[in-house]
Length: 162
Image (tube, rainbow, N blue to C red; front, side, top):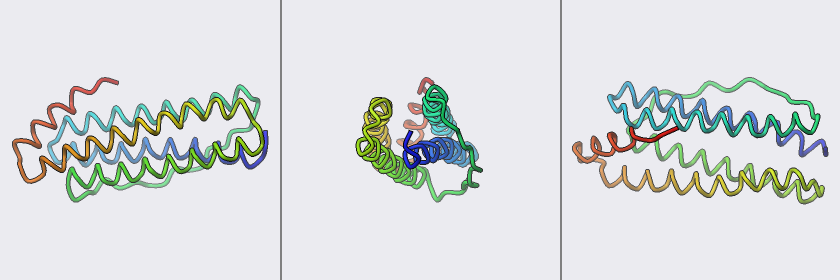
């Protein structure tokens, strides 16, 4: 495998693990702010991000490549509001999308067709992720300042499976 692509895929494993950690920090804030439904949603998102890291990990293992697992940075558990949490989460998903796009570009440049196939799943997943986070943020923005609406959303978000 091309060394730059390999480094990028290893970095992406770290980014996915870090995303899970970020969402766990958000879940902490939400739980401590008495929003158990929003916290539940973020914990489910944490598990999803860990599954993304494992997808990359297993791909590199199957290819016989060396996997590097650097430290994950400390993340915040402090936010201004529920809206702030989702704004930061959406921003992070956009960073993940940019990283995946960069990896896809590199895979095309070096004609690594198995990496292209694997990364296509991530390209599609990121469209879904940004849409999900954006839609959630829009609902939360409509409810902000209306405690009963925010509590109703909290209850709805608590029904997320996964």
